[in-house]
Length: 166
Image 1 (cartoon, rainbow, N blue to C red):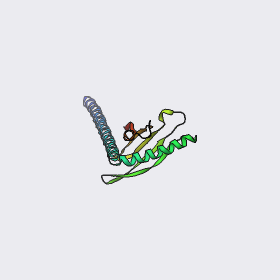
Image 2: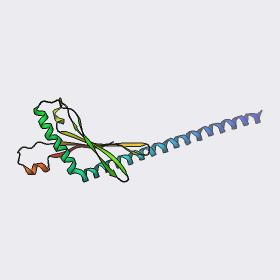
Image 3: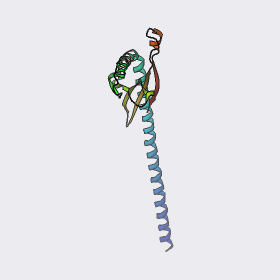
Image 4: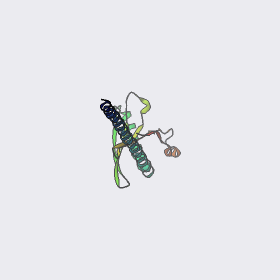
């Protein structure tokens, strides 16, 4: 009877130890996959931000031309009392590394919020690293000229208001 009790007791202890080891192993595995996901997300965000920075540095004149051209048309629309709405101005493909990325440019419009009048959005979405993805956005505000012949103002007419990557 004593030997049977010791055998059952030993089996119960071994069962508890095996459950504990299995639990610790699964926790470690989950922790490793979570850390990998976080690392991939940071890499995707860094890549998206790098793409937007180099795009804006290399194509800032073209982007300014597109935005200012549309802004001048928008002023004409304002005089005609056309409803303000968000409008896509198109997109540009940008090669970074060995991949092409699509960068969209659009005008943000709203009749009820005057503070976003003249606000433009340049965004890059769906940059993937592993299972993670990131998006990057830049909001640019256009300021009106005070004098028509002010050449110095043209250089500072556009200003980045908001920039974020998520």
